[in-house]
Image (cartoon, rainbow, N blue to C red; front, side, top):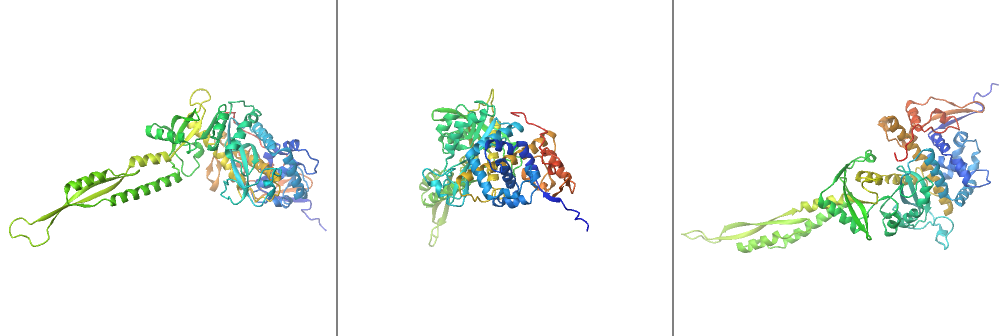
Length: 568
């Protein structure tokens, strides 16, 4: 009997996971974690983390089915060795999460951030900080004990998900280059952003020192929650950019001064916003504000893409003003039989006004014949009366001022506007706008396609899992960054959605390009591609610093064809 022709050959269908695995190898995820997390387990923590990271980046498999997921994968290619898929059972992964928590999830992220900055030459001169909340199902009763169980306190707090009915935990991120995380930790669910900023400012000096940057060598970017008297005292020696909250009187005063002066510096559009549906036009006004007896630099920024919520508020105010002045006008007597009285009423009515409306009044003289039979001789007797006529006018100057004020926000900073290490208004706004990269990261961390519902009972394991999600985010952002840098360096574009050329590819876009990559892996001999890669797939591999060997060879790492110089 003839032997089965495919005996001893395994067939795999790959998508983009081999690409992510190559970046994990470049970053040495397994090695870094194994050095930090001591264990005698057969499943090493580094291997378990890389397996979970790739499971997250598959965007299609819930974490609780990870064992079944790895049954179908080329484990030798993606993990470096062909381990038994049963090793990724719940018991082993739970023990790994416990070991990670004991070693310190934040410490692991810090070390991987250092590794990423070194190997990918990240520019860490501008760091962006923000927090978000993640809602969870379950009681987590131990979090309310005193003292609480180990790990973050999973309790109710201010929900950024709009789910105040659920308990939650918080995640803080410190990112560079528009969203590449270099530090993260899991916080209590009722943590205050103001306090979280304060803690970060207290330790950021030592963290950035590990990246080779001393005091004053990096700029701290955060949202308006950082603006408190305590935080500002810590920021006095750290260059920073933030947004001044509108509930500060200094904010409203700065906006009023800018609008009244009419002296604006044209900023134009920002490159980061070119991909949005409607690109905003900006202009700025330099001024200063006094907060707690300290003078700070402030830049009032006006955007022609008005804040819709505030515009609705102005429309409501306009409606209220119209109703008020209409009621005032209707309360005035309309007909007079004495011209002097009519004229006095016009004068009084013309002085009536509300915040956004005025009245323009006049009277109309009407002569009518008296009732009865007219006389046989002489003119017919008449009566004369005077009717008030009025028109409601919008106070366009005040309305325009309100609308212009509504389109303004104030950037607060201690970075000089001229001289050494200065940033003009446009550069300052561009620096602050880099904060949107952190917000996009939160979208990744909370995307139901990326992160499924958490089924962990112990807060300490939630903390460890949070670290794994951030590692997945780090790989995701490094792949995206590398593609964009390559295209900028080479002056090229990639065929994006609907094959339209783009110089801003995303990792999600890349993940849709690689599908149905079929590989035959014989028991002896080299694996082979069953079908040649398409031209589009090869273009993306070039941008990623890879070639077709990434689907065949477990030792492939990305080649960084272009490197950004620090500060560039």
